[in-house]
Image (cartoon, rainbow, N blue to C red):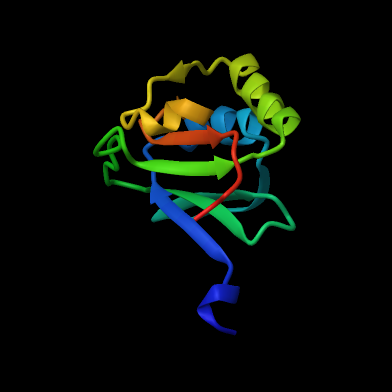
Length: 131
């Protein structure tokens, strides 16, 4: 397997897994792919069963993860189909999350930014990925 065929796991610490679940599971529609609890770490993997990526959030017992270091720590989801963009947008709003102004105004042109309970941000970009 070469790197361009790899599956990616984006992992980051949190201080409260329960606070993140409404945002990623209920608002963004991720599925719980797995979880673990042990004396040192608790964690959950979220994603879509057929997608080549997933997110992992972990709590390290006895350590403080803190909030996002900047407002420009982003995960960007390109949703070129307007109906899919609108559906995710509505689901996040219905879950109680409000859009925030993007740190970089570029993302406000065709997208909308939301902030998770840890201060990390996601952008829903109503555009295709064009380099």
